[in-house]
Length: 507
Image (cartoon, rainbow, N blue to C red; front, side, top):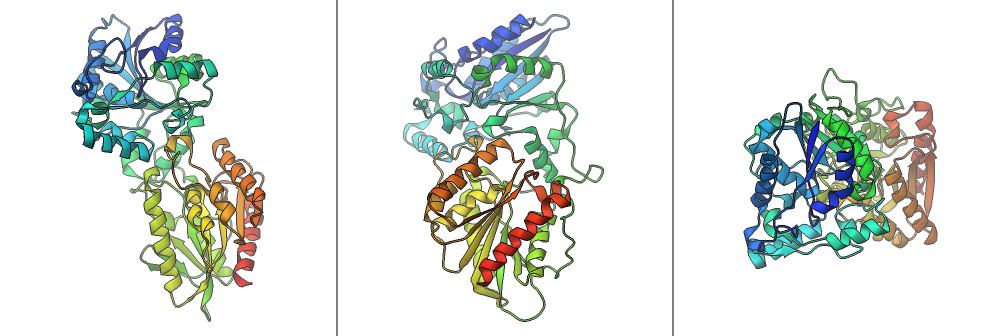
């Protein structure tokens, strides 16, 4: 029999687990919800006396209060912010814990405060400013009704449950967000399960793709003691699907779940490193800083197509994005059409890096335009996947030399888990100002629902504003279709899109 100890996220108290706990008890398990000091009404305290260690002590007390008999196992469940006190407590009681469940949350690191995991960058700034004024004795007010999306998707949460969430919401002591998590390393031996809420923008396939990028820091996710589950709901599954959550927790406690495939020489070739569907030997690479140029032989200067890789891509990913077959293949396809193909690398390593990536792209484009082999007045930009948000600036104020903008399976609005609700990177808002700029959009027919919704909103906005949008559909294509799907699925769309871009560059 399992003993579940569950810790809620920011602003939410122990009562948020009520239905899930009841389901677990009905299944024959024990379920304990931890009231957190200074958040739960049952444990009032002045904010100045409450920090992350206070909540770690709350969880330790809950662990120590459980008298485990033969055959019982303690499973700690941390949702959102709650994973921080869970890890802190498990690190000090590792011998008593059989599994930790990360419920739709990040991976806290030793020495890093919970504030770093707050998805909304504007909120991080707000907390930091408040701390500078009040010290750690202040609080962060809970979201107003209608503002919970800044902390995660509310998909699936019904009206009554939403009213309950608002009613139970409590201020979060700043010290809980600002005090760094300190770990000895003992917790690393405890098996873990990640439960991802897909309507909040996360999925097991997405995590596998991050692992496939080859970042050594993510290798821990492929260890045999790590498993994953998905729930087709938003960020608060204890409110939207408590029975489904309870079922997943029981399976996780039993060691079930999907395991990730390690990256490396013995692993199958990941999708992003499979061959490009067109055989294009093309010109050799000419590396200039963060830009790789593929220049056709003969005269010039020539128009250029600048390809912008997607992301976020972990900083430790190997090989680097500009060496991926899709980017190299597109650049060589442009060169075969008589254009200069340019692959531009940028610093989009995290969802908080969009501003930096935008600056990197602007600088990289100027480097391309300054090359003597390039016609600086005839440039096209081509974006992929998560770099779709970075089309915003170019759509809103297209320079005269930008003759076309293309995008393949782009993300065209921030996904819920990214915490970019107030971000300026909103292509659907910018496209109404694109004027006569031609936009070529390659749309994957089997796109993930969350990304497809952003594309649909963009297309609707473009049509309403009479933007010059050309859709190139790949009906049976998936996200990353060039190296993921059969060549006969992708080749016609690639040729069609490139012909359109070249036409706009050479008019």
